[in-house]
Amino acid sequence: MMTEKPQAIRYGQGDSTLQGVGGTKGLHKLVEDFYLTMSTNSDFKKLKDMHPSDLRLSIDKLFCFLSGWMGGERLYSQKYGSISIPQAHSHIDVGYEDKQMWLDCMSIALDKQGYPEELKSYLLVQLEVPAERIRQVSASRKSIQKS
Image (tube, rainbow, N blue to C red; front, side):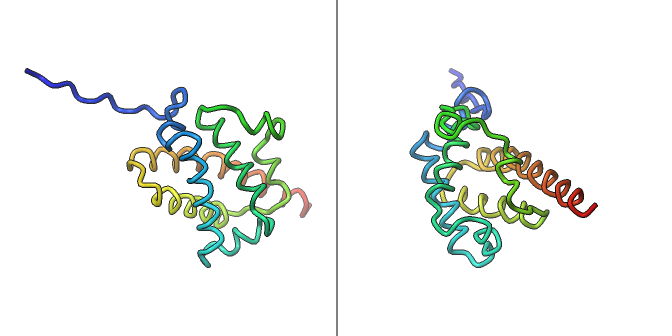
């Protein structure tokens, strides 16, 4: 008798990514660990300094954004209105080092959650896209300001 292999989870379809991180509770824990890592690891001081000292709003905004981004409820637009990721970060200059620092901080937070490697890899690849877009728009804005 043959046993069926379990179906591989296909992240990015429906709310499979949100479910993969443990639903909204798991997502909130991930976001809190991301900001805790940023706040307590001296390697991320420059990244932390780009944020307000009270991180509650930053935590809520990232949580709300990621909820919709992961296929769940679009909490960000319900609470804060529409979002343009680069525009939301237009008040800061983001370079290659800053982008990588953000991704490294997220990688550490993902490791703390005990997620499967496939989920962590998927998330880091997908999160690199908006992070790079923020960096590109920041670089473009900087070059226009210099002209």
